[in-house]
Length: 178
Length: 427
Ligand code: SF4
Image (cartoon, rainbow over all chains, first blue to last red; front, side, top):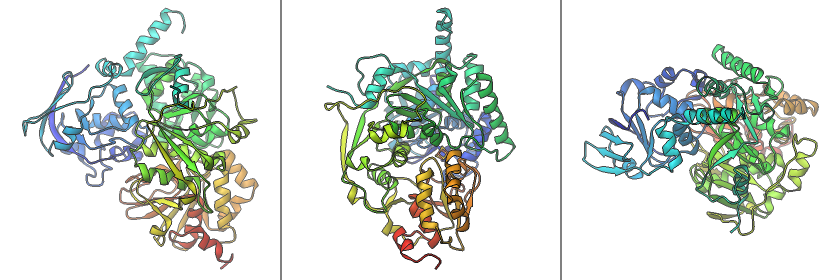
């Protein structure tokens, strides 16, 4: 795993932020260009508009309400967020495909309803991904992260689905199946 | 304790006797799909990152050019080209070029490529559509698709199942679209998050396969992993002469366990629309009638199959759209377009003053051929109206069934179809 501890300021969002708000469909044509996607991350959120990526500092975090990432299956949603320099997304809950995509990419997202409710806009946060603990350095509050099932935790730790597939392909080649 | 149909499919696909909600399983995939937005990244991840040289089974993969095709600009042409080259280099058996396929979720069922009892994945969130054919079908991302293409298997969490029992039958003018919007309004856009929605009950028996596909199409709008229905004579009749492989239906056991059961009297469901900016923001037609419109869009994998177009044409025949409205009709597949042409529907649309476009996702995702500007109001037969979905984030989109769409285009405002049909033709 790349990093086990991330730190930055909190950017708060509401419930049901969907993939078209995270990255409007018109940018899907840049699906292979993470940096360009990052420049447009979150700009579909009506109160945000263009320029989110320019306002944040690398390492900052998104703290959102329920069902974050609902809508399309577009993997460019977590990719755009990562491309913008966001180090981790904390939410009350995640939409299914967004959740899978992030885990598959080895990108840290954490479900923590209490933190989602209590962290304030701009609070300085530190997330210990190994320990599963969020510290709000502004208020001193601490929140536990909901643990992942072991298989997913392992995927996240080893960098996502790519290394897992590589491993299985190797096993198959060794067994003469492929 | 028995299993639901979704559990049975995952048990079979993972080689287990029994699975329970919450289990993580490795499932063998029966069919997989990707399109012009998802094949380029998936192909790249599969080859360059995972190091796989070929697709596990080119007979069990469909690649469809639909989202930004025919290419709307040079960047989408590049994606179309990568998609085309990938399909050719991998020897994909079910490749659908512009002018020969249409929207993936219409094409796969109509070609008999997704079948009862199967485990199907598509790199598109509305892949849940196929569940009306008694398969477990779900949307995945590009890395997931790369994994499937390389290995033919994928990890799944066995979902809890919510059961929806529809009693009696739908009233006049009320369609399966209204029924599913009603359900989403009831449970919310995360009401079925990561779960299976199993639709059953007497009302379904009177809904044809195309109407059923409209319902499972919108499972994702309630956050579900999949929507699923039993295999009955309607299913079998639809598959006759179409199915590309032998198939084995699944049925839920009488003692299967459901997380929750919802009983719905279909007869009491009114014509239902979703107001901006969320599919859960539903209202009976009375509450939104009179809303003035700039654009009406009849299209998408939700509601632009041949029976949808027939019903819309019935309202439009001999009538004309209001002068301030643009009506865009986009058939959802090439076969649908051909059939509409044969039946004279295209002429009806065109004489009514509609723009008839080629089969594509087009305006549904604010891609091309009908993107909305700031402050514009649109009534659409699609599935999603989150901010910015069809263009500018400040455009307002109402979701409705195709008959309401046709009637409202004529009236220039949201209108109950009975009011338009009551007026004599030509007035
Ligand atoms: S028609 Fe719309 S919802 Fe359907 S696949 Fe295309 S973009 Fe997605």
